[in-house]
Length: 114
Ligand SMILES: [Zn+2]
Image (cartoon, rainbow, N blue to C red; front, side):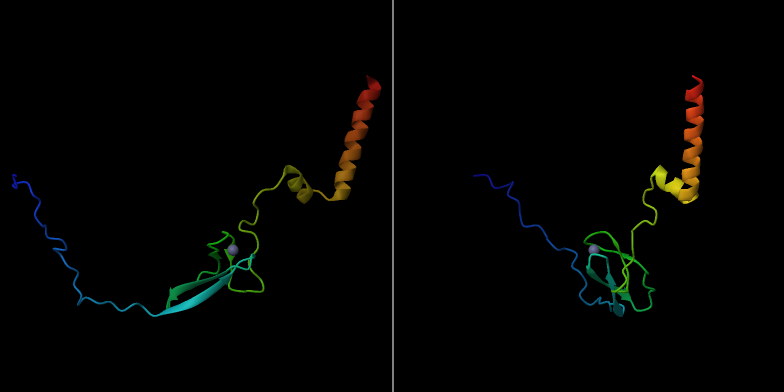
């Protein structure tokens, strides 16, 4: 049997890691965040790093804050508003009633003429 194409042992790990090269991890502190769903997230920050006020909960995606009793509210303050919601912001109910009465009166006048 020919044996010329037998793969010989190759050098694995020819470039070994240098075990002498150590690094000291920066000192860390734990910061805990709570989301509205009572998920607790602990992140570790470098001691001199400023902690973010809000951290996205990795479990549900809601923003989590550092106050367990008062987690932050909605992720986006104004996620979606209907047209009616915008109108209600601009007009009081009384104004709305007046506008409606006015529109109805105009409609009745037009119908009365037809
Ligand atoms: Zn959560």
